[in-house]
Image (cartoon, rainbow, N blue to C red; front, top):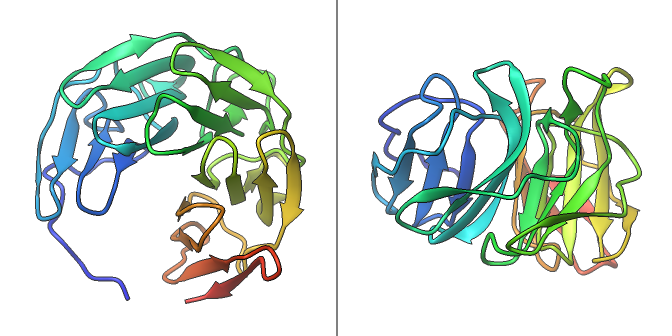
Amino acid sequence: SWTEVADMNTGRAGTTNGGTQTAGICAGGPPSATTSEEWDGTSWTAGAAIPASRGVGGWVGASTSDITGAAGLTGGSTAINTTIRYNGTAWSTGNNMTRNAQYGPDGATATTGSTALIMGGKWYPSPPGSTNVTELYDGTSWSPVNSMNTPRYYAGGSGTSTAAMECAGIDYPSPGVIGFTELYDGTSWAEGGDVVNARGYGNASGGQSGTILASGGSPVQLFSEEYALPPAIKTFTAT
């Protein structure tokens, strides 16, 4: 079940996040798009400022000493393809992604942000529409890998750079909110079991080799769904 915990010091949306249930970081996102906060399992405290205003980008990293954020919006309306890194103390800039500027992608990583997979997103301002482009980060530079089958943005991404999942999201301009799931094996994407309720703006957590939790989203979702593995099951169930 879900339990309410301490609120953040500043409300914000479209953030760059990373870490675990007991040690996490939340950075950027309007209206405080250049600040960050850190979670210690009990409460939030102010963290280091990020290099530039940003929100609704992709993020990866299960350790608060190695977080990578990529793409998104700066100034609330300008799409970017830039990268930022966090080492546990300070933020720095990294090499740009190879893709055009876009926002709303998702990320998957192992335990750090040094090896990351960023997938999907929405081109802005052109060409219009969501994308299925996927890129791999090696800690220094980005390179394109095989694209997803279905374009989407504001979806739920989880797993690692060699065993990732992307579920639900928005395929713009048509058909809109979707429930499709795709699995990445380090080389290519394949269809998986759909979420029970199609949603955009949701979240996913966990690894492709275990149980994955999909939560929240729009249309408003007050319940979560679990994706059960091993592969013989591969289905979402409402929780």
